[in-house]
Image (tube, rainbow, N blue to C red):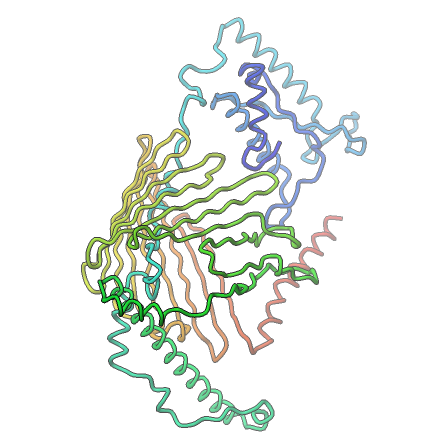
Length: 539
């Protein structure tokens, strides 16, 4: 039996269709090769024998329940091993790694099953409890997952000439005020001559520190100047696009077309994808290259970063395109299909947005994705309006069809940008389906450097709350990035839930200090040493 996604369910359903559901009433599940060592877990650790047997038995029993249409059916499980090298006891019976003698237990289960079948015949007990059929019940939709998908902020679809700057335009207003207050200081700096490596080597330690500090300060001012010029150009293009929608004289339009005409676009290769680390000498990034040309259809391969196949690791294709209806309504289409030896996943998203006033817009979208072994269809709509200069409110609806189950939800969201450093998003909503309701909410606060991304300081706080079936699930995660020195960053992450479990990690990135990379080998060497000791004690 396959333990992933009930891969043998179609075969068991065929058996049920031919022989009837009653064939499973007296069936005994037998797992062969029971003396074999269990496989390693996905994390690479050694699995417990009893835990592996329990998991495999549960998967087989659940698959039989779905095939038979009876959720109350529990088939007994027996382990069998007939290999000649299997360990035996003094009586000559084969013994499994857990100390169990499998042959007497299998005979006992067979006799017990026969006795229960005869007793059911005498007592005229029905094969399955009335009104408890699993097949007639519709599958309950995963409300917590659908609620988290509803609460997720979705980017608004924009026209090609409007895809500049921040998503909601609130940062642009702040940039305009800051640009008017302080102009670029880079042009006012005195001339500066960069030194070669040989010249830098002759400097003293204090001179090197002063030189690199001055160089870093000038680079930061130069990048800030470039960012301001780029934002001014984007705002100018927005104003030009808005002016182009107004009727203009014919001669002006002809002159504008002549000026806008330029050389035809030439297809250029896109940057190579970063492949996962491998001990292989080959780095086949050329297999994932694609061109950025004038074609409106963007077709790209899907890279599986956790795949075992290093040579050809992509197992799908991604297609995207942006349409414009009547020069006013943008329509975005994106689809992705992935296929491996067992499963196939399909994801498709169709979205559009319409503006109906200054700072007001309504978006409508349709999603299709694979959820388990079913296809889920979601229709969602959101209305956004900027009621204040630094505040944006959103209200949305969502309807999801999964199999024969229907779920609907509603959400509200509010985004506040206090200044260029701090912003906060608060959201809440509810999802209902088949008489069940799930409530949830979230909060995300971000504190960053005033010159981010030039300034590398960034801190994020996230909080999520879900109430389903009276069980409250609370999760909190914190991430902070602090610059240490000129080329070193300290990144700390922590998450905690109301069950008392969590995780904490610290990472240091540096392009100068090799000692940090050598210190990272200490946990690896310790793990190898512990593994060597376990092998010695095991022998």
